[in-house]
Length: 328
Length: 108
Image (tube, rainbow over all chains, first blue to last red; front, side):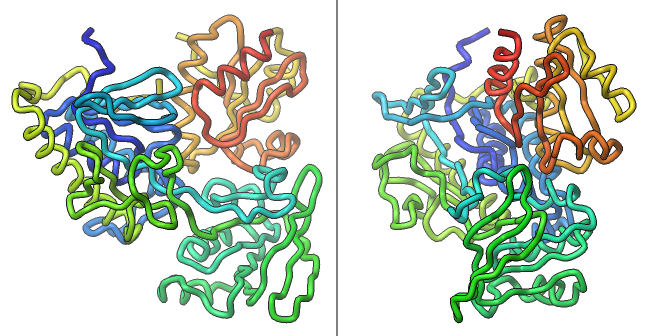
């Protein structure tokens, strides 16, 4: 077996941007590696239904991600399930340091995506998995005929809040303002759902319970009044932040930590690209992330051909990777 | 090749609590995306630890009694039992290395 740690294109993060980049890079017969620390699919792996990916009326998020991975794997993309510690430029190449050694690539595409924000209030960490959840599709079934609160006012909050009503007897959406920023179609569905109630101008200041969540403290931000609401589950959807801390100050970022790239998803560092939710001004949609990933893969192809004049892609699609990669 | 064995509420005591070796239990349900990611890892571990650790899966939809007895409120949850006692618990999808650490602790 040849040295498995030398690649042409290394993609960090297996969400839609990374998987789409993988399809294009592998189809371009570049030796392509995707490194994922958790679940392939990123945020959509936790999504019950993706209903806005053009051409597909409705698909389970995990299934969509798996289809993308299988497609990329059929063209030879490898997947390693490892955690990336840092990356650095070593001569012409990029070295990716992981919890299981180093990998070298001619080009690296950063698609590490975004992670949900936490409330940062007492009880939240202790009760995570004990009634505090960031994934209704994963956990709502454990709260049959019980009451829940859903924190947030965006698409995710309403989408997941609506999902919880398959199981919970009542879901109260707690939102810090008096109007939602979720899309109209989701607002209509939520308002029409008899199991969904709203607590406007309110925030949660504490999650109460020992072994399990038993209540939350809700504060009215207008009157300042606090009250206890007995519930069994807290589903939190208050936005997200890009996973770019591991980059340090290697590349310029905006105030929110998003990587600044040009139209080809290029960072100022040669051979280093960023795509999807981690880049500045991303529309944060599956479809736009896919587009970003494709653009970055094409950008990487151009870069490799220019920077390595003697470079030759693989003569044929490697057949040993035709099976979808499984976790190692 | 060792494969995890499916257990239900009525088999729980005999298959898990009374087992001679440490037991890794994968609490899962068919609708849970991250559970489907954990499954191949658990399969691999079952082969690697064949003879040392027993591997079982419990479908939380069909076995509500056991799931609620152990306070399962999020899946996937992996629990390790030794001598009838829960000695470790890992909630959510975690890398294989972390599950291995859990097993090594139970075997130590």
